[in-house]
Image (cartoon, rainbow, N blue to C red):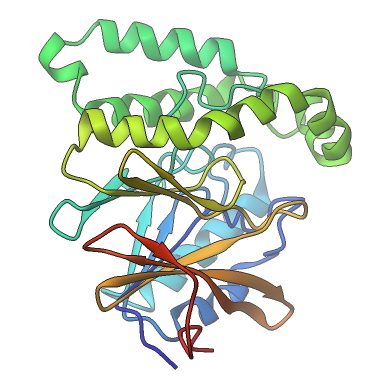
Length: 286
């Protein structure tokens, strides 16, 4: 089996109602076959800890899991866990690869969400209050994005006990259909928005790896590659990105009772060329 020096996953939503990862105990297999594991946001939900005992239990278990593997795990924030880590992005491979959750791509964060209008307005207000030179930095925009996501916990209709929370838990398919036009627009525009992000903020980057939108895939635009690792939710597929030598192997994730399994290779991307080709020979590794 090939050993990856780095593996990236996202949007596992551990313990959330429609996640295929009911508990932190399912995560251990993700460390097999890699030297280092990156959770790229929305690993679990930390927004309503004071109202949700189960969320507190999952966070405690996740904290223990990361502590049990010192130096082998990096945790980035998402919009569901905006305060789980001080890290909002990674610059890898001497600036050739940008990794971030993806909630920064649209000013509404989740354009089909109940908090979209508030988030857009509040983020604009906070950015406008900063010096021009500071507000244009990626680090600043990510920090403000996470601050607003964190502060929304007190007004969100999705908080435990609220109408939005019950709607999200009981009728996710109906809710998705109701917002299908907005979801489809975001999926269609996501690759271009991701590439535009690196063109503006990381012009030396040729690859951007994100999650957030729960739509797995690999897209080539303007000599760059956008990779979305999908989500562990019932209606979506999930991917992992393995750094092996000078290649990125984009692999399927499979969800079993014993834990998460790494599946076959869907894409092989050359780090130095950003080319994409079908996997060959025994590239799948497992």
